[in-house]
Amino acid sequence: MKRKGWLVLLAVVLLLLGSGTLLWRSGFFDALTSQQAMRDYIQRFAPYTHLCFFLIQFLSVLLAPIPSNITALAGGVLFGTWVSFLLTWAAVVLGSVLVFLLARYLGQSFVDRMVSQSVTGRYLEIIRRKQDVFLALVFLFPFFPDDLICILAGLTTIPFRRFLIIALLTRPWGLLVACALGGSALSIPLWAMALLAVGGIAVFLVCLKYGDRWENWLLERLKK
Image (cartoon, rainbow, N blue to C red; front, side, top):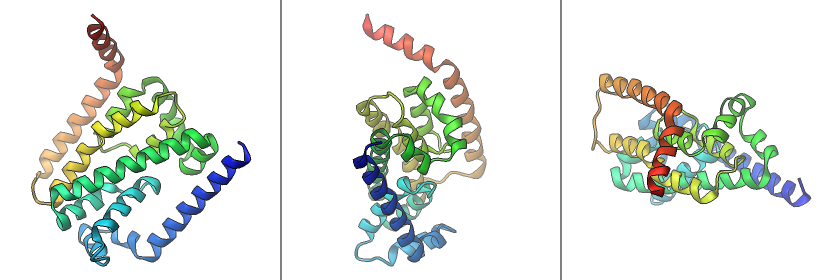
């Protein structure tokens, strides 16, 4: 990596360390213990609670694995479903784009500092092979380290514009559910959540196996 690249990498590392230290000193990580604790934490920054919430959601991508769904729940309680959702969607997509571009520009050295070798070994090759299908499924279902996978995607050949479109179209749905739950616009019993989880895993496995065939079939249809 050229000297300029190392300087950018150093600046990013210092920024992440500084942001993490600031969150720790302000009591953010203690607030992750419950939705009420997170709500109280955000309210401490009035009258800048909206800005604080946006920054927290943005940093949740850079400082993975901060769970953005937990903070989205608290945001739903504070601001209502739609305000919380729009702030979260904008922050998460912006963070996803930033880590994707940093990984693409700075390369493997940056990724190694952000993502463990076990996660890289588990997901990088399948991202390279499946690309669109896998990224869409990862963003749609909540049981994947989607923030880390955004970083790994920067090492692949997927075009930036395509990554951005996938993130814009698929990342918001899980966030919307979390914001709706926090804003009391949606109530899901535990048994229904369990059924949704089982169904989601089944759909994921089927799509992962046959996704390429479906994609090729659709492309052939569109070419006619």
